[in-house]
Length: 382
Image (tube, rainbow, N blue to C red; front, side, top):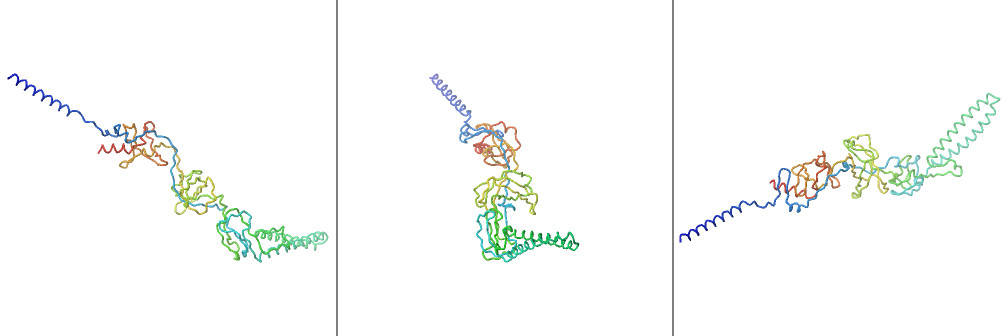
């Protein structure tokens, strides 16, 4: 009996010890860690976290960059390609065949004027021609008589002076008639006219008309304005502090106010040398492809590719901002190192990295999934 009780007691003690050992063994087994591990600037992701973040790595590359300098401006026509049509002598408008927007060709009649003054100029010229012929004949006659008489030599001198005066008068009247487009070689008593034509001085488009039939135009008053749109350029207003960033032939991207979504390429042609009162300088640019449909005075916005340089760049998505600083992550999808960077400009989906840190040229850089990696690191920190 006692032996049986002893066996039962020993068995109970043995079972109790086994349960105790099992309980202790279960408590000492570490739990499976499903979160990111952070050590300083390094974050260790689980394979599942890396897969969920869709991480992609790549390398930084060298790229030509420019600083986009924005400026306002307008379409402008150089002075030699814009013309204000005037008449040197006043007259009444009899006919005109152009309207604003009309295209005219150089030499084409655009206005016909009438005035009694035109008749007087032609009359004076023809009278002068007749008197000059008589004066030259008298000069020849006096030259023959002057050989034998002192008295005749005095008359020769007077005839010579009168002839020279008449020649000057003929030339002056011919120039005046040329101003009103009358060819003196075709002028005679049968071709006298009270009207003259005003031809287009250049080929181009009429932008302004200041007359109508029957109005009187005073001498040298503007009749109309014509511009040659083949030579239009862009006039930009640049602040004085930015001028040193500009160079001749720098690329310019232009968008006009009436069509902001259409971009046109241009280049800097001329940089002004005079600073205006508002501390700005005029810069002239030419369109790479002339556009005759443009209207002088149209306003525009331009972006100048200034300060060209070669820099290290990464995709824009590779850079994240945190607590006022910028970072990229290097390494692999599961082991990522946070690195602070100084960034420059961002354009066309890429971001410039300044100061050329040595690791930038050799290490893989996370270009996708970066916000998720930063979130895993900062959430673990908290």
